[in-house]
Image (tube, rainbow, N blue to C red; front, top):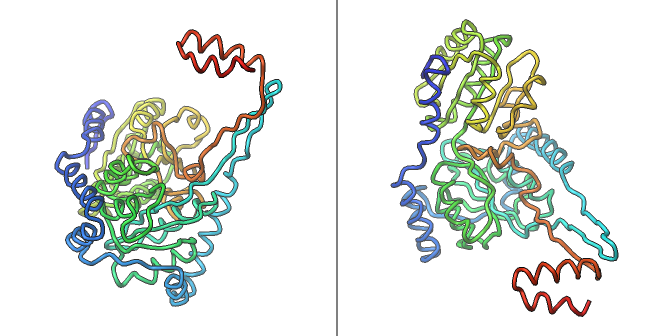
Length: 400
């Protein structure tokens, strides 16, 4: 943990943030992806046994339903309620087709769903059942016909993961993790290939998504968790510390930053945070800023995944914030991770400078349709084609 003024630690924070991915990790991911692409099931099995500790295994809707029926009632009830909230918020996002008439021409923009999607669900020590819902439900709402999921779940979490796949509307699930799972979905190994891969995960998973993006679509870089907090000293220090700890527990690769205009409040939050902080929690910075404007400026440069506004009048600074994956106001960020209804698959690593939270738009593509003839458009186009040296473009419009 680092404590100090923004002036003292700003450079160190930005340097840590901009350090980039290690070359050896990039090369390892590239080899795994290429092995799965070239060797198919043999390559997938080799890397899954080596890294997951088990062979890849496929599951289907009948498996999901049986697992769902074995889950405790309280968990089924909560998963169903969470699914309903996610579905309602994402259904409200669905865009309408557009039609414009320009003279005698009709131009349309038609939204069409991607045919198939792969959702990566982190597994390992704990089952991320919430991610199953966050990735699959918006895809289904958008109209995606086939949703494949991949998760390296342990045996004790089998029913939880398969049950979540049931309520999320998953078509098939591959028990497999890491870069090899991303490659399997992208290249159609052990499951039918998909048109797009989405989901959060380790640096290995995110680099694998970038690697396969030459062959299929991806959402964005959604790696280790990030949280920035802007505070004016008005919030209960213990509550702020708990919100920070909730994101810090994602692990040592994560990043948590407090920007506080009140130095005494910052110290109080630090004391509460330190009392609960455990080994292996996120890298954490406690920075004293001179003003909320200074805090906003640094947040926009950091472009964090999560941003918590622990201030009296959040609307006074909200419009100034342009780079953040999700913003929490009077809402614990952890609530947005689960049942708020919004999506917890968010851009990290500075990607919120140009990407936002996962929405139905990640699963839709706009197709433009032009219908009809226009003498005016043809005349304009012939003039431009002449300048650009496009002879047959020009000739094809001379008949109009």
